[in-house]
Image (cartoon, rainbow, N blue to C red; front, side, top):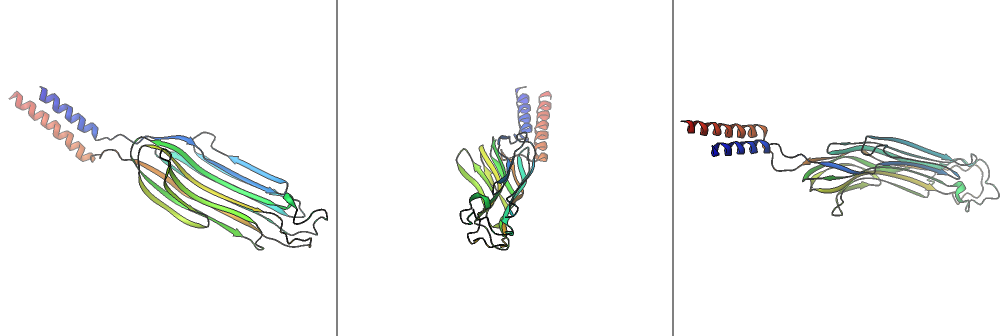
Length: 281
């Protein structure tokens, strides 16, 4: 009787062990956001967005625009978008940003009361776009991670090369919060690259980030000494991440193949029956 009970217990243990515990992926912080801003002289337009419900699907598309005194034709535009979501053990999304601004034709001379060099904010333009997909999460077991996607960033300068500063970048990062180290990082500022990497991480807290940033800035050209009808271009900055994803898979003890597990159960069951029959005989 004792042997029979023991064999039943072993058979049950083997059958139950064929289903390894699943990875527990727990998002703890949702830092996703978009920002679009534009300033042209004294005119400005600033917009921000973030998920209405943490960890829910996030879809955002912001546009900001500003323009200064019409005679000076100073303008600025900022744009930011993002579409992202979380799965049972995954994070994915795309984001795009742009910023542009410039001066058109100076329709007549500058006002005599204003110096072209000390014109201050009246003739300046600034624009920016920001799209951040950032999630902090925990996992309870060793995991295999797979990161895929595409990132790109660059600047387009219009005729006249008018502009004093710009910045643009796109990147992907997986950060180990508990140990304070970066597991994976890839970024571009004037290039396009495919993102494709995989590896292993242990139980703990991590931060996954995909980001796109773009900005432009300029003041009045110091060569504008009051001459009429001087034409200037502007410039635009672009950045984005496309179909970026992080997928996690648990790495628990080896899981027997379904057929193998079934055979093990049937084998032990047969052994139990055979032992029982021998005892009866």
